[in-house]
Image (cartoon, rainbow, N blue to C red; front, side, top):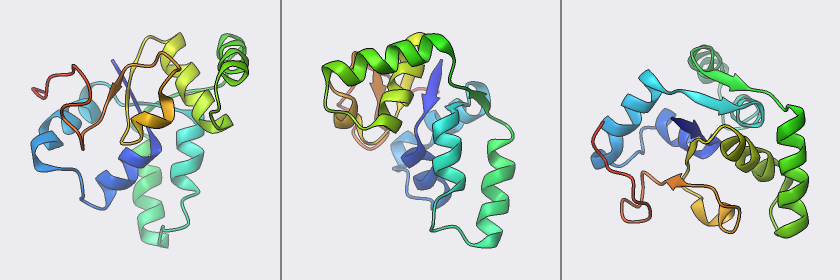
Length: 134
């Protein structure tokens, strides 16, 4: 199972996902489209949206399973913040991935280093031990 980060949604919408990763990512969207509530807020609040792209983004997110900020996630966020120099939104996303045992799909895997999160970076197929087959 996967947790999709905001940057991947933005890259998907602007068509800049690398060709070798498109099938894998489309498979994730079809079968395991899960996001943190933080990702939903960041994606819909993206200032680069036109009114049309906002409507498309909102519809696209309606197909995702959105995980809210639960007590276990809050406790994990606090643990992460106390042990690393990570921004609060990223700590919530990392905690969500850890609590739900999800692989984080992100281009910014370095932002999550030291948190114990497994990542799949569609832009760097050598960063993770995650196969590209859908």
